[in-house]
Image 1 (spheres, rainbow, N blue to C red):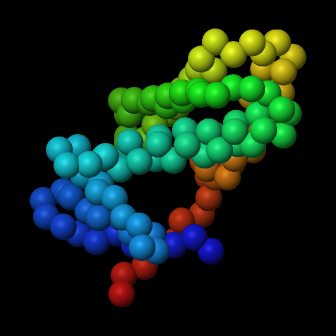
Image 2 (cartoon, one colour; image 1 turned 60 degrees about the horizontal axis):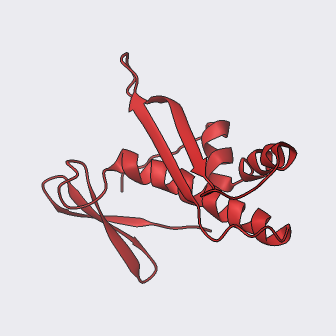
Image 3 (cartoon, rainbow, N blue to C red; image 1 turned 180 degrees about the vertical axis):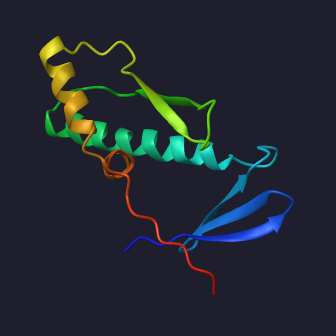
Length: 127
């Protein structure tokens, strides 16, 4: 099971804790990442893990890559991302078109992508 605790700090700033690790989330994005940025970072980094797994399993030499995720909020309620664009830059790696298609399908199997695609049920309770 995955577990994250969010502790309120001050203003719109929170500290996210998972085990003995933590980072700052700030809705005003003055001290840390905003919650929407954290969501995009989660998606991009999860896809990065799957890309790395694919590259290693296929013995493809791609020493570095960059993944950018971007989105804008919809103009109509409810406030949400309607489209998230993910751009994967393989830094001049020589990979043929067939392999590129396979890579794109493989990384879409990351759990964060599957979760966002699946619209999970979210239960919220007050203690």
